Image (cartoon, rainbow over all chains, first blue to last red; front, side, top):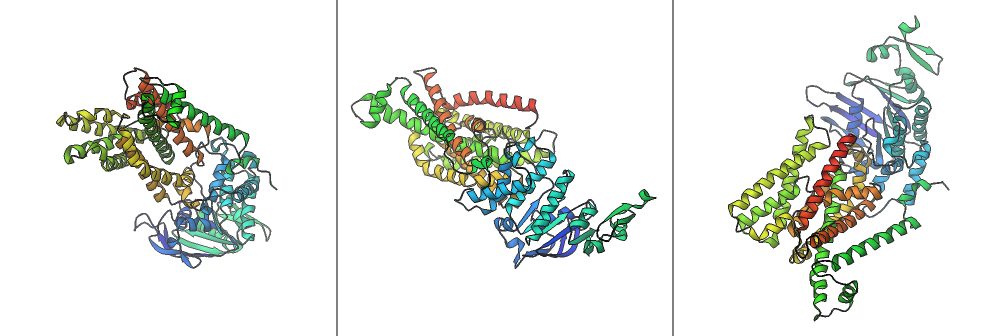
Length: 258
Length: 348
């Protein structure tokens, strides 16, 4: 199912818009990366897709349906979000938290089944946290918490996956574990939309990069076309030059090379 | 096949541990039941209790005590205790605050005040107090919750907003009730016991009248259990997991107010039970899953039955008010809880 944003605008007050007339299409089997500077409206975009916020103008459609016509359960079966900030209750174990990802597959009378338990366990295996299954959440490090959140999202098994700065708090091994997991989801035909700050990771993983600047879409397309010196200067205000070969490159600030 | 020993708690698995737990729970319930019926102004032998239930003899005075006095009283105590227990458990879980219960939210005082208003202004009898009590409970609850939201910007630490708001609302309605009683002391003379919370001889009929409504409310609360589990992760995360947050909040709060007002209209305001039950539950089970809700009902029932035993024996043959007994234990418990939590500083 493809997710479409049509002429989407949002602002807390009408005269100060955060997003202005954004139209985007997200297709299955594609890894999207959204780049913008802080306060550039990335998280707002996710909040609109998750219906935490209501657009001032425009609409969002999921496949044939308007998003706002879906029930909360239907939406949760289609779209999941790895949130940047999520309060973690003290009295909950990791496995209990990951199990919450199965909420949207329960009916009124059902209880968590063997199948739910299996899926939960596999999600924890993929995120390398099975040994923490019975640990309380407040005993975990930031990175372990982030992996637990990602496992919960995997247990939710949605076609569209939103990742809000998924690599924050993680050490290098688990940063790539998580991004590889995103890539694997894309290969299964799912849509992954990630907000990243690291240009190198964006260039390595993205099929399609979207750059937001000044409430509008500044540029979008394949990473090697979009991530260039002009864009880095215009959007992020850093003079960079590209170092590397044709396939992989790193943008380094010019003044550091002198 | 995967190794998932760590996941056993999600699947029904009658291992030795849970069978032992169930058996010991059964033993405790039986013990409290027998104790409750046998002790009192006139002590009864355990054998007489058994005989009264199995071969009732209408000429035997002891059998009358068992069947017509103590058994109904026990059922009222246990039923109301269970309602208070689950209401407190769910309220603490929804609001993620260990100091919340129907008494600390001011809900009980609100229910009492509007009930008194109904009696004074509309001449409603003591048997039909449910609707005014429910109105009062909702009024006080909404008052407390909106006031605690207004306190959000103040420098008071986060968990104390709602307790402060609740005690202010409680004081307000308490003062208004006192004022109303003074307008016509004779009119209210015979409900003094009810005002403090007491299980009286006529309460069993009231309890039978509200039983089905109480059962329906409890089922409604249980049906929100899984959604409340997800809500522990915060409203936004719960929403993206598929929870209809507004509906869950509305249903849970309404049910909690409903149970509180049902208890108030039957036996009067009884504190302590709703506050302490969730803390006892946390000792035995994890907070997620349905088992905690069932256990909270059981512990609530046992606690109120025990409070009633204390009320009937401590100055026998006179009988104390059970509301007084539970309130005095409850306020000490509440102070201790607050003290240790403020010292730990982690929860509030």
